[in-house]
Amino acid sequence: MPQRARAATAVALLLLLAGCGGFAPGGPTPTDSAPPDSRPSDPRPNETADAGERLADVSFPDGFTRAGIDTATARERSVAFLRTEPVTGAAVERFRAGAYADYEYDAAPDRIRFRLDVHNGYIDVTRSDVYVDGGVRYSRSARNRDVSFEASNGSIARTRYRAADSMWAVASRILTVAEFRAVRTVEEDGERLIRYAATDVAVRNATDVRGYLTVDRNGVIREARLAYTRAGESKQFEYVVAPRSAGNEVAPPAWLPAASANATPGVGD
Image (spheres, helix red, strand yellow):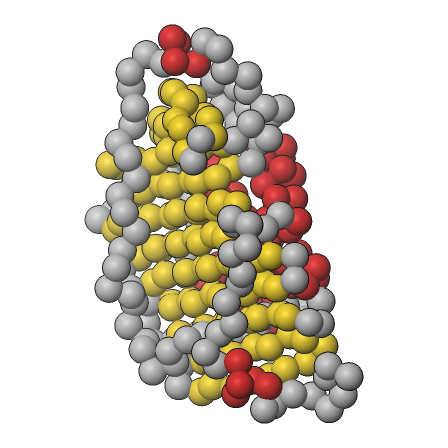
């Protein structure tokens, strides 16, 4: 995340998507304007142990070396994964006290659901929840206490395209702010991943810098976490994605009947 970014960045992104056929504000609980009680887990402390032996037999994917990461290559591989593979993921941004953006993404070949909640830290809350199935795009939109539902013709591919860009924006901000160095490998569900540790951030007077990311053999970033403190304010960013297991369907939302009742004439014909 560029060091100048604030909660307004997420709000602007939301409005941009809504204005170009993307996601309108919406979400699961319009009366709940307080930030979630849960907070992202603290990123792991910087890992300083000599990783030479651990990485000696590792084949790094294109764009990744022990000393750093090519952001353009990481974006290309990771966004392609989000747009085309069965995937589940979440992302979190905590800009300042009470200001946050929370993303949830679940996609399969025949269904997708994408949720985005944004709070500017004052009084404005916007929530978006979009579900696409069978060529129909259902949405639940809310701004503060105003809620609306809609069903219209929609494309899974187009929705995945936009959702992937929104999700990746969080990882991109982490890569832009932090410097990373490979430290070791980790095993996850029988898969070998490369772990990078955050060594510094391009933010003046930042303290208590913690973070890491993992990348798979295809150059897809599976997880990225960063936390630091500046001027007494805690900043936290998290991005986690994983392949969906076979047969694990994207569940319809509880508000689907309300959206179906507001279908545009001819939808689903």
